[in-house]
Amino acid sequence: MSLPTEIITMRLTRGVLLFLLSLIGPASGAVAQQQPPPTRAIVRVTGELYRAQNNNHYTVFLVTSEGIIMSDPINRDFSRWLKAELASRFKVPVRYVLYTHRDWDHASGGIVFADTAQFVGHQNMLAPLAPPAGNLALTSDAMKMDANRNGLVERGEAADAVAERFALWDHNRDNVVSGAELARGSLSDVHPPTTTFTDRHTVTLGGKRVTMTHLGVAHTDDSSVLHFPDERAVFSADILQVRRLPGSLAPTVGSWIDALEIVNALDFEHALTGHALAGTKKDAADLLRYMQDISTGVAAGIGAGRSVAEVQKTLTLDAYKGFERWDTNREAHIAAVYAMLKGAPR
Ligand SMILES: [Zn+2]
Image: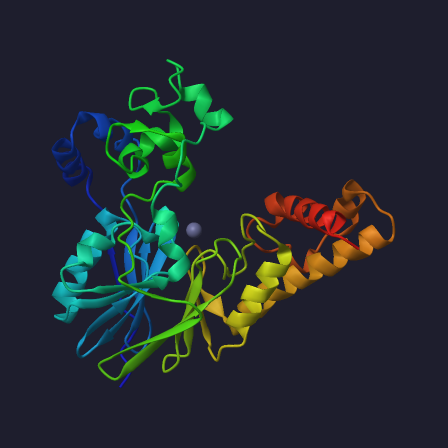
């Protein structure tokens, strides 16, 4: 039996928000007050598979008779909200949190589910959760914050992203952020995976299956795609995008082609993403084709002796004109692929 698509949305009222901020305290409250209340929603994709939204971040969860398998926790506030929603709607606990990758804006907040869940991530996720060894100098951007020139960023000196989430950068909680802590990233609220894998890992619960497959080194070196074979769905954050170009093609366009070939080799209909739109298998194929088109297009331009500016002018990739960020990211992608191909040994 299939039920109609259910949508639940909740917006914090201003009164509730101000009350919550008063509990957090004036310093962080002053920053958070400038943010509008989060847009949150739960939408059924198919069967017992749902997509949950926190502003422009998304996760998915699969409900079984023995508990829930979910993906990225996104952050602590969202996870608390989601946990309450799941408890009231499904009456079964979260048994698994499956990470797509370690980035703070997807992987934070899992501690909320640690009372009932196991955490699974690629093994490359573990080591980067601690700062690199040794004393790293501040980057030039961080040096601008370091008013007293002691090589550290004190809480009072912090600006922008470091100020916004100071506690997430401050790994050893000594109220200063070092060069090594900055190099690690704002990962302090990422609950480490309790189970790791190298190539592929399957979780089974209540007669349902989810398979995680490592995607290589595109975006980060610990990214996995989640495959829900019975639901014919995949979920990937930051690599799979629907009618939207990635931020960067780091480390190489070849790594993106490899990753998207792995995704496209899976059997699915629903292409679920960590940001923006969800789509279909055709959308996953379109993004792979973008990577192939930009790669062959830039190589042809180099072969014809064109400058990067000339390639940016002629390689318009019009087939992707309707994609989000085509106007802002296409030229940077061409420049990155051009530099990579030029630098490659021949
Ligand atoms: Zn992301």
